[in-house]
Length: 309
Image (tube, rainbow, N blue to C red; front, top):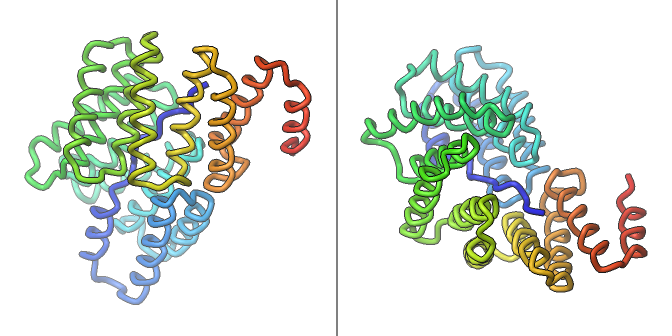
């Protein structure tokens, strides 16, 4: 019943700084920059459909740039992040791959910004089941970050989180758990970190996978508290957290309480990601599963009728 953990793929400050250092075609740049800034803000606010539309406009604007223009990599990365959040992993993979090719060619394979693109591509590789390739990309990216004086703590935390998940997929559980806990502690040290909830969610998913239900519930509750505090009660991450706590409650036989939380989650998902998103559909299916446990088939029928299209 758990929703897939959405690890942050956003390094907006780095991307914006990279753009502002590019002086050519100032008028066109400002128009392009406005679209990137707006799309980035929409992404952070959880408005994924709006972000997708805005960044597609930015992609169209980038068509006038040369094939080697680094701004192409910026919009490819940003659009890839939105597609990843929407569960469209094949599309995000293609965008990330194109962005990495541009940065590797123009900046070099050991540049910090190239390492960022490696992490993004690794995330989509893992989502598509290509874990060996994801591990190679992440270890190379972390090596570049370790040797860079300009690497921010957030960049390294993101890469470490991805590597932990990949290692768990490769059945290297001990190293994976060590890195999971390391990420949580690193996030806790950052003031009002919007990704602390995601770190706890990933830790909770690890515990669920390894049948440590009590520890999972605590981690998911920590995620919910962190996200409500920092992101507000209507953010898509809060919807994810509600879903995950509800999943554990249902496992414990507390289905009425689970149903209440799932309905809250669905309402937020509908507002923030639309009824077409993978997370909304997953949450809807989870509600139907709980209703089935409660023997309330009539409510299942009503839901199916309401969202049949």
